[in-house]
Image (cartoon, rainbow, N blue to C red):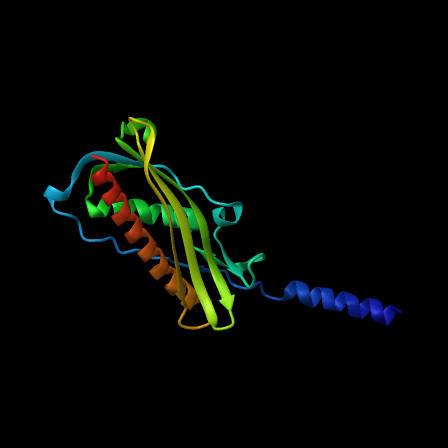
Length: 198
């Protein structure tokens, strides 16, 4: 019995001395579109509200899914910021860089903006399938006329990109492409809707 207790204590001590896994952070980059000409700029101000998201997307942990119903997260593999913050930041960057509006602001109370953009990040996850790992992004956006308080456009934008290999680094690269395409599409559709609503 003493031998069993000693063995158990020894194993506990060894487990306590084991090094903790190293935390790795992954980036999702975005390259803004080339700006429009001065003639294409709308004489409007756009206010962009912070995106909303499910609780899981408010944390920086990388989420993965092996089925439709179960979401899991890696404990030591993190995005550099929460997915909702990353996508929101890139969306504002894309809208400002495109030069579609006189100004793009992120504080509605101070802006007096003509249009308001709000939305929700629906998915930002690694999806593990039989044919490989995929990066999946989905968001819903709504553009409102700030004066009439009427929705002039809304839509869901999503992309699924296959990673080059079954690794987190490859998923991060695929996620960058998925976010790039989602934001570029959003900027285009927002610009078109604002032009029609003038």
